Length: 420
Image (cartoon, rainbow, N blue to C red; front, side, top):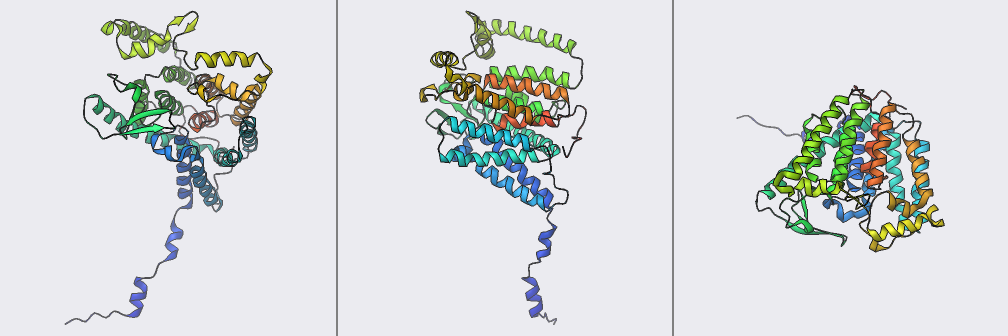
C-alpha cells in the first residue's frame, strides 16, 4: 500500500503567493485600458444615456480617476505615451474658457471644483500620443456599432408588436420615457406608428450627431460592419441635424482623401431628388421621411420651417441681447428657456467674449495638423455642429474633431506623429 507523505514545506508552498507573477502584468496595456475606459465614460457621459443618469454631471469624476491611474502607470514606462510637448497652450486655453464660463454665470464653489475633473480629462487627451486617440476612436466606433445593432434589433421587435420589459423613466423632470433598457421611446411619441430611434440617449438628434461624428473619424472605412450600423442608426433617427452633418462629411471625406467627387455629387443630387419627389407621392405624402424631414426643409416667409432650435420668445430675447452692451458677456437664462439649442444659446449664455475664447481654444487645440484638408473639414463640421447644437465642449463633439484634425492621415492606418 502506497503511503502519501504531506510535509510542512508542501503545505507552505501550497498557500504561498508568488508576488513576482504580478510584475508580469503589462503596465502599458493596463494603462491604455484605463485611458480608454476614462475617455469612454467622458464621451458617453456628455450624451446622458439613461444608465448614467444617477451620477448626473459628475461623470467627469470617475473618468478623471481612470485617467489619473492611466497616467500614473505610464510614468513607469520608459516609452511613455503621455509625452506630447505641445499640450500647454490647449490646456491653458481650456482652463481660461471653462472658468470664464463658470465665473460669468456666477457659478458656486462646486462648479469650480468639478471643473478640475474636466481639466484633467482634457489634459490627458492633449498629452497622449495621437496614435492612442486613433485607437480609442476605432474602439469606440466598434463598441457603439455593436451596441446599436443590439439596440436596433430590440427596437424593430417593438415595432413588430412584441411585448418587451419596460419601466417609466424621467430625466430631471424635463423628459419622460418608456425605457425598454436597450432603447427608449419618448412619451410624446408613444402613439406614433413608427417613432424616431434614439437608442438609450435623450434625443434622436443627440444620438444622430454622435454617430455622424464617429463616422467622421472613420473616413475611408465606412464599409466596416460597425460603421454600417452607425449609418443605419443615423438614418432611422430622422434627425435633420444628423442628416445635414452626414451629407457634409460624405463630401468632405472624398475631398480630404483626394478623391474626385463631381460624378459622385451629381449621382447624390439625383438620388436626393428621386427620394424627395418620392416622399411627396408615397402614401400621398403621409410618411416619415416627408413628415419629419422634407416638410422641415420648406421655406416660409424666408425662413426654413425646420429651424426650430429656439422658441419665439427666446429668439426675441436673443435679438434684444445682440442690440445691447450685454452681448459682450451674455445674460442669465430663465428656466423657462429650456429646450433651446444652437449657437444663439451659447452666445446668450457667454457673450462674444465667450465665443472668442472658444475660437482661441479650438485654434490652439487643432494646430500642427497632420493634414490641412482634414483640419479644414474639422472646422467646417465643427462649425455646423456648433450652429445647430451649440455644445462645442461636449466630449462626444470635441474628441472626434480633435482626432481628425490632429491625427487623420488619408490612406494610412497609423498616425505618423507619435510625439508631436
